[in-house]
Each structure stands twice: as structure tokens, then as C-alpha cells.
Image 1 (tube, rainbow, N blue to C red):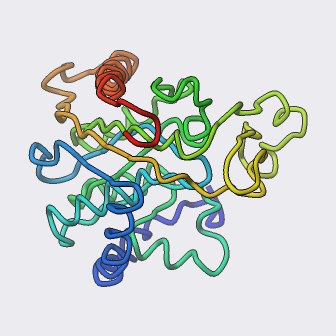
Image 2 (image 1 turned 30 degrees about the horizontal axis):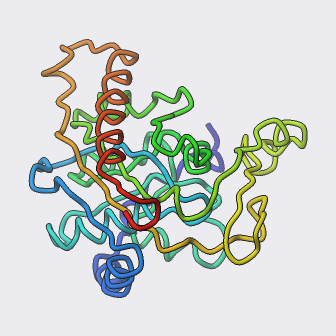
Length: 269
């Protein structure tokens, strides 16, 4: 591996608790008012390093991380950083340092391992953009697109997996299709590392193929943090990755289905 290919494992050292606290001070009132955000289950959150595994929602404007972090820091303070494994595109341009200073790190296993072993909380969305642009008709389906690397990350770091499911983000506009066929025909993966070219309908532009970006509707977003999964205690000293992944997705699907059953109306909650 050359130096240019090496992931920036010093990313976690750039976390700035003061800047993050000021950012949360601005975001928290907006999130709690516009999205009427709720995060449930934080009382059972484990001490030390933990890998939070979530479903990703909201297309170009996912609110999963801002909502979780705003409520997490409100509950636990800023001495325990929350890091989010993120796409490389987030670290290009003039905003790259801002994202690093507020807890976003490149989605490399080395980054995740260092953050977890430091006692930090790491958020990962195995489904990525594929999940965030799932069609509205499948909004309450857990789909990681076969990605299981998060399990190995947790095992190698010796930390529990904390599943977290969110509902409401996929109601911010009408998501019609991921556009996987067209993305393959256009060869988008070579340029954008993306397998999708999503089509949605929303406000104010109507139909959108990612651009122009529609604004998210003020849907109520609820996140349920589930009981931590101690992999070794539950699956033994040599856990099977497929078995752990199947269990994580199963408990997440049950929790998401429960949230959906409690939801009376789209957008209103």
C-alpha cells in the first residue's frame, strides 16, 4: 500500500469537542422542532467503545447522524466522541476539515478500529447510499445489500454492536427507484463510487435524479437504540460472520416493524 492509498487513521485525532458542542447547540433546536426528533433507548447504551449499526434514510439529506449525535451528546456530554464512517467525497473541498473536526472519519477499517479502541462510539451504515435511497414502498425494510464488514470490524476491535433503527427519514420525499440499471449503464461507479442513480419526487423541484436536490419534508423521525450485542458472549470465541449479521438484521427488522406499527400517519408520525 502506498502513502497515497493509506487511509488517514489520524482522522480521529482531529475531533474538536468545542466546535461539536457549538454545532449541536445550533442543530438540536432545529432537529427537535422541524423533525420532532426522538432517540429512545440510550439509557442502556454500553460504556467504552461501541459500534452503532443503523439503517440509513433520507437520500441526499439523511438526518440519522445529526439526530443520533444531538441526543447522544445531550445525554452523555462531549467527553466521549461519536465518529461516523463516511464516504471519501465528504472529505473533498473546503468543508473537509469541518467534517473531520465534528466526528466524521473515512470509512476504512483502520479508522474504525482506532476510534473504537480509543473508547469512542462509531456509527456505520452498512447499506450506505443503497439503503438511503431505498424506494418508499420498502421504507421499513432493513437491507444492507449484502455488506457484512461491520461484523468483522466489531470482532477485531472487541466491542459490542449496538443496533439502531430509524423511521421517518424515508418520508422526507417520495423515493421511486434506486436506478441501479441506469447507473451501471452510465458507469457511475468508476467516477462516483456509486451503484445507483436514484429518482425521487419532492419539494420544490418535483422529479429529481439526485439533482436538483429537493428539500426534506418535516417528517417526524424516531430512532430506537436496541440492546447491545456482545458477540463473544452470544456467538463464542470464533463467531461466524454470516450468523452474526443475520442476527443483527433480524433484531433490527423486528424493531423497525414495531416502529412502523406504532406510526399512525406518514410525515405526521
